[in-house]
Every structure is written in structure tokens, then in C-alpha cells.
Length: 196
Image (cartoon, rainbow, N blue to C red; front, top):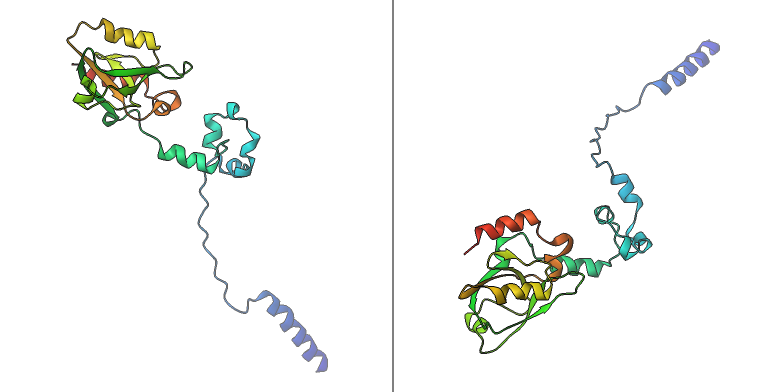
């Protein structure tokens, strides 16, 4: 009887190892949804940003979050962004010559012309549409984006119209040229809608 009691006790101990004491609930886990490059993106921390030279940064690097700019520069860029493909950021002015506008050329690498200042008693100041810093985008419905100073101002001088139609972009050179600038297709369509 002693033997059977010990055997019974041993069998109960072994049997209880396979029977759960409390019911186990299967936890439902939601599948993790991530993009194809998320793991790669996580591998590059913001600390690695200085590993890329400024002149070697590509749009793919920016998409992946790898940037040579500091956080302060990034926020400044975002707050200064003006959409170059939004009609509201373009101002049309109709001025007779002499206009009373001083134009200057942007950096020659960029091209283009901007309003440097207005003569206090000039026609542009009286009309009130133009402001210093406006980028000259079109003259009489023809694009002058990226043109040299001589080419752009030549169109004003040669204009046969009694009033020259100027279209300016109010948003700065960095938003009008380069990767933030309007596409040629959009700008052509935009000028077609706003021809005099």
C-alpha cells in the first residue's frame, strides 16, 4: 500500500505538470504594418546626419530622414515654405513705363530677377501691388523664370504695350527655383489662364 500511495502521488505530480493550473488566454496580437524601408530607415539615426556632405545629399536621403541640416534649419525651412504652384502666391501688376521699380538679378547660378526696391513716387509704389523681394515670373504673359537680368528687362523695354503686364511670385527665390519651383507644365498652364 505504501508503494501504491507513492506511485499515485508521483503520477499526480507528473500529470499536474501537463495540466494548466489556471486557464491560459491566447493573446491576440495585431500584425505590425510597416513600410518596406522602415527597418532601413530606423538604422540611420539623426546622429548620422553629419556623415553626408551637403553637396551629396539626395532626395532619397531626405525621404529616409538622413539630412545634413540641423533641426533648427529644418524647422526654419518648413516655416518659410511658400507653394510655388498655388495661384494665390502670384501677383499681377499692370504698369506703364517708367515703372519706378529697381530690379536686380538673383545669384547667376539660379538666374531670375527680383524687385529690389520701389521709387517712393513711382508708378509701382502708387499702384501698390509690388513689394521688394518679389520674384519676377512673367512679362506680358511670357515666362522669365531663370532668365538673366538683360533678357528679362529686355522684355520690359521691348514691350509694345502701353502698360506692361508683370507677374511676380511672392515667396522668395528658394521657393521659386530648384526642387521647390513650379513644374514647366503647371507654369505654362497658369500663364495661359492669366494672359491679358
